[in-house]
Image (cartoon, helix red, strand yellow):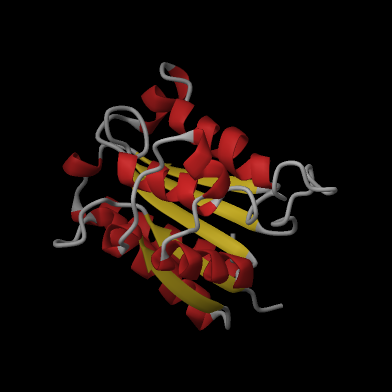
Length: 195
């Protein structure tokens, strides 16, 4: 059954292409070929402020770009979140975007409402793709894949988006063309399956 897929490009640089962009394009190509409908959201191109207080978290109206992103997430059955590991975590711009998007009233009901614990995004799934300079097994084994775990447990599970699959690509600066092609082919296959 065809799915609605949103690819959230979390690389904070939009002025030049990076491997994260190639991974997103490969996933989209596979998904489109399989009959899924794909939309793209590039976080670096959005105009929004960082949240600076609990009052802003609870009550500030979302910027137009955030409201539009929420509409697209509401439309989607499956989210693909792609980002590079920066200083051991997701880039601050992506974190700020996720804080804005999943605020009360969208991902969960507003505090104090009769349905305060209700999750509004149940039934959606996610593929998280992380690129990094270190070997992926070091990130998993030594560092405990902490930014990935934070995204899965503290953000996506909070709004009841699950299951959350992941793919890690390590040592991206040193890979040759053959490995790059294999990784892009892997992304196409995942896109075909909407996984």
